[in-house]
Length: 89
Image (cartoon, rainbow, N blue to C red; front, side, top):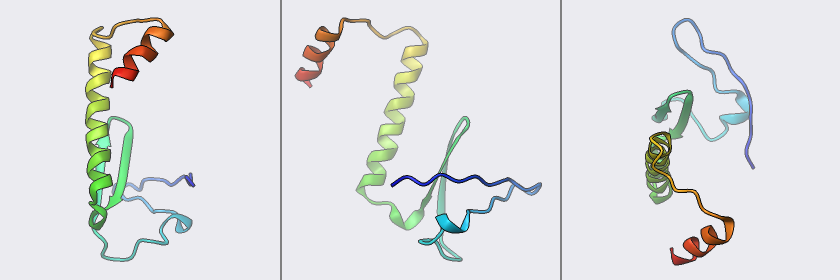
């Protein structure tokens, strides 16, 4: 289940992870922070498993796709044509 909470950033750039979201974290844990414009992803460094590597690759491909979209490089197609194209994958 996804949990959502809010926090504030201090004048020193520090944030507090809400107590209900830090059960699996302990003092001294190393964290990885990934930033993309207004999005931050926070992950324990020792969780660098295959799923995390796949998540990073997915994020990279998504960013590339958005850049191609912004440049007008996407094709429009009807729904049925799209489904046929997806079946080829």
